[in-house]
Image (cartoon, rainbow, N blue to C red; front, top):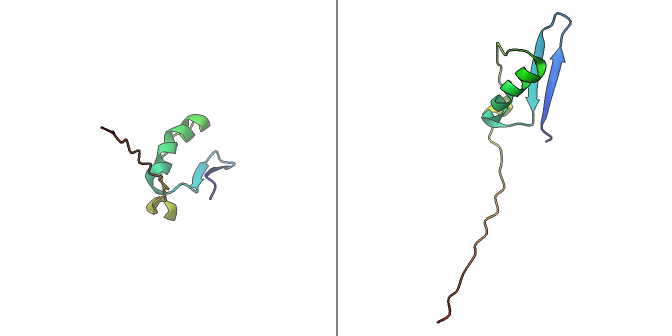
Length: 70
């Protein structure tokens, strides 16, 4: 899933921002960035089900063998 931030600005000035496709606590790293971009301060947080999921990370392990010939 593509990683997105959905921002809604209401007529009364109320702003809601929701991350999509970002699993785990990494979404909370975006709060200061969103606050700065919107010149706003977060006053309440609601976590989606993605917050409680873990992101699958594919790692490739490379092994280098060095042989010494005597």
